[in-house]
Image (cartoon, rainbow, N blue to C red; front, top):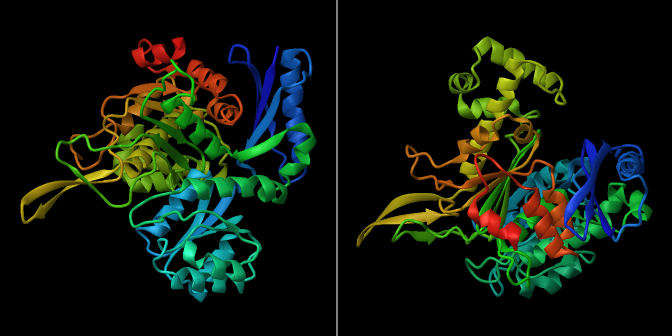
Length: 474
């Protein structure tokens, strides 16, 4: 049997999957504690020992690939020119590369900005600014300021190409990529994403001590969120060049976690309202957002505050006093798992609310603008109304008896017509935590990765939708 070994170095656990390349299925799964602070190979070896015990042998693998969100993930700061334009384009590039954004700045950097950047201890800084042939003074100024700042992190530069020589003189060790916004309102973030991922493999893996596992793996390819986004894109579009294997079409992946709630969307998100006009920065087809205030453990109180205590208590079936006691227990032990009906009710409510808020923030909006020719419907961001598939992943969804109750919290609310959330999608569950593995495998075996991802998704509700049946069959 030809196998692939797929590894995710998480902050808490190192997960391993053995996948058969012949029939695109997981033949064994295991995990061990992530021993990042000491020697990461110890936790990996524990996970592999458990995996090989299931297999009955330690096989030779055709591929041994890994992703990582260990040691806090890939921490990134972005610097651009205009907050709504090049700074936002830089932000999209960073998130799409799987980074955890710890700072975003626009305009000419100040001493206070530099203090914030230094305090955030980024692994990478992405410097952008100006369209090609446009403003060059700001990116050159910022490069000079950063050169004097003594930052230990590497730089990726993806700004005005006409300023590249001056910036390179100031930051000689920087990695250069094509401009994230070569023309006004034209988004081109893939080259910067690729540069960030390459830097991750070359330097960040070493900085976080993950290269100690080099002899046990072929490559640590990317941050784990980037692997999930790659899997989402593969599922939506199908494997390239594989005739007769269509993707599932526009889809959403929602991952409520302990520290953040991530949302990935793949699709154009064109207006579903006739006559609506899109404004603002174009949206990337494959988009990721990270809500750092919607973590079910580290930021549980923030979720409650965003919803309102009275509304949250009604959702969770708790009194105010019960809620305060439970939140205090969670704050004291963020690894805590529910041990009572009240704690389960809290977790389910936190999951529903995190999903609802995160998808609302990810979705586009529609409003009425009044012009000389009358009212016009204006759309900013993606219209998710016609997205046909929503995939849920993460512990709270997998553990829930009725995961559909949590996922349905994201659906469009008739009382909030300006929010362009999904209307009537099919809900699927990544119950075996396969998306990261499919994203890794997509880089070397895209057809196998696609079949693995599709066959591993479990429908939430009655029956398998026709578009999923077609994908599985193909």
